[in-house]
Image (tube, rainbow, N blue to C red):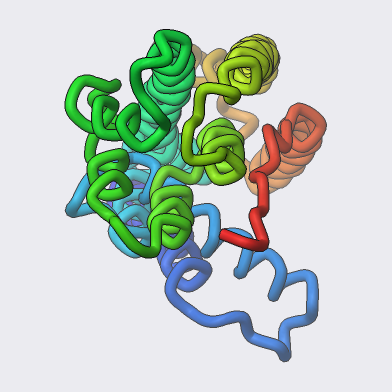
Length: 296
């Protein structure tokens, strides 16, 4: 019996692992329908964005997919070994894959917050330098490349050292930073005149706008995280209860070892999963939109 349960867990883990790898390495198969093609493309893009946002040299979207698959496999295997219920291998698989994704996502969000703070500090420093009237925008960019926020010093250094093609340098920097707040800074700088002194009111307004947008987005993200945590706890409580009963070898679980009980448990887990995905979809926030500069 034990070997059969472990085999079931391994099969479930391998199945989900293969699904994750297919969704993240294969191209969109047109024969599966447009909605599956959109799912594949969306997963492909999301993994790429998440891997890039984490800022780890060894991590790309394929590596992230492999990490999710490995975590899903061990999650399913652990669930079946602890509970003795092969049906609970699927929640273990999903929990393991979600855990790996959450760890990378937390790092990506932390780096995003650092970049946003760096943009705000850069705008504030630019305004202060221009208020003195002793320097223009070009000289201010040189100072930012030397004494500005650490996460953006390299970007300002590349821009400041470009005598020609500075608009192209700003465009490349915007692509690397990939922050709407940095797009706003680039747009403000690209419309400046050589002197730059008259831009003090513009940068003051930009500082206010960036700070307000950043505050609103972070408050929304905090509320979103609270709501998602609540939904995760609500959905996890029945599964945790089953795990506790399994640990105490409760006779109440004997019914779930029969085929009818397993079918009932699978149905309930499917309903819970559907409700959880619906709640996550409702809590999905689009975030700030990037600013497109057609002349940059």
